[in-house]
Structure formats: structure tokens, C-alpha cells
Image 1 (spheres, rainbow, N blue to C red):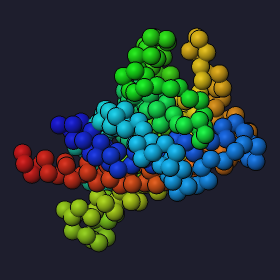
Image 2 (image 1 turned 30 degrees about the horizontal axis):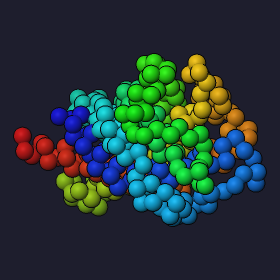
Image 3 (image 1 turned 45 degrees about the vertical axis):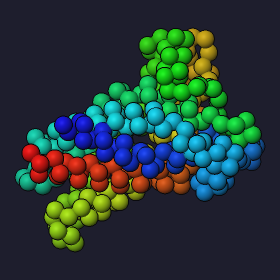
Length: 298
């Protein structure tokens, strides 16, 4: 039940934040491996990107990749948050009755690795679909998939089962770093808010406040890994299934840093916060409240 509740909570958050995921993906691919000033800027900031995509691709364009997004959130976060819930309920993350920062970080990272490996094929398809757009505002490689099933079938047909896990070398560090930052700060923040007695211990505002604190840490820690992950998943590949721009995580990270500087690794930071911030807050809030509700109903 922990896995189901976690997946449902993440899907609830995804419904609200998927348009911002589309914006974030486009901004991270804009000017890929190009020095500043040498490429056309289609998306000046998160608000301009939101307006441009809505105007050119229509309102439906802002919900591109929603189906794989929901499937990804259900399975990846179902496994990730569900695993963490089991670890938490076993008492592992506490030392002498207090939340241990080291143990929560390790538990969050382990849960993140499991979730990332499980969800990688769907994240691959989601990235392809969200980057697809009208040629006048297209950034990054355009795959021209017709939908999630069509994309999965096409990738499997051309590159076999391993082709579905292309880019997972970036997904594992991305999700493990993000998960460790998110869950460790969420657990510690909940304990801090309760200790300060700002709200009642059983108040929904405790989880909401902890989620808001956690969201800031997650975005700062995760954005460079997120940029690399998006680019690895979306890069064009040859007939053998090998990437034509990057050999792997380290190669993508170093090329982006060398060509675009540190700001290249933080491209779309504003969009990342507007997407990851609310998603972190909502998913952790829904997760915490659903678990409390389930315990009351048992």
C-alpha cells in the first residue's frame, strides 16, 4: 500500500506541474553546446516560454508528455517514496529517537536509485515528447513520436531492450541526488517544524512547510544533473544506438561546462524551481496526508 499511495501522490502533483516540465525541458535544450550569443533565443525566461509554447503549439502543447509523465511518476515515485516509507517505518532513519541526517540521505539516495532504474524508459519517452514542437520554436533533436506506445515500440524495434534504458547513466545520479536532498531535508524539516511548535503535530501545515523548505534544496542540488539528464535522453543517436553528441554522463557534463560555462548547467533554473518546487511540495504533502489517512482508516 505504501507504493500505491506514493504513486498516487506523485501523479496528483504531476497533473499540476507537467506544463512547467515542458517549459523546463525546452529551456534546458535551448542553445545546446553553443556559446552565449551564437544561437537564437526562443524562450527568454519561464514566463515567455510558457506564453510562446501556448501561442505556437497551442494549450495542448503545454501538456505534452502528460501520459508518460503520469506513468513515470506512478512507478518511479511509487517505488522511491514507497521504499523510503518502508525504511522509515522500520526505524532505520532515527538515532536515539531523532532523525539522522546521514541515514535519511543514504536511505533517500538508495530509494532514488531503485526508482530511477525502474522509470528510465518512460522518462526517455517523456523527454522526447516534451521536446517535440513546431519547427519555428524547436530546440534540441526532434524525434517525431506519435505517442508513448508508438515511441516505446519504435525504440525497442530499432535498438532492442537496452535501447529503452539509454540515458539511465544520467537518471541514476539525477534521481539519487534529488531523492537524497528531498527526503533528508523533508524528514529533518518536519521534525524542526514540530519542535518549534509552529503548528500542531498532526496539522497538514507541518508537511506543507517541510515540503517548501525541501523544494529549495532539491532544485539547487538537482538542476545540473537534470540538465545533463535531459540532454542525454534527447540527443540524436546513430544506427548502433550510440549518442552522436555525448558518450555518457561525464562527457555531457564536461562538454556543457566547457562550451556554456557554469550557467549552462543551471539553464532553466527558474523553470526548474517553478516545476520542481511545486511538484516537491505537492507530492510530499499528498504523500504525507494519504499515509495519515490510510493509517486512520485501518
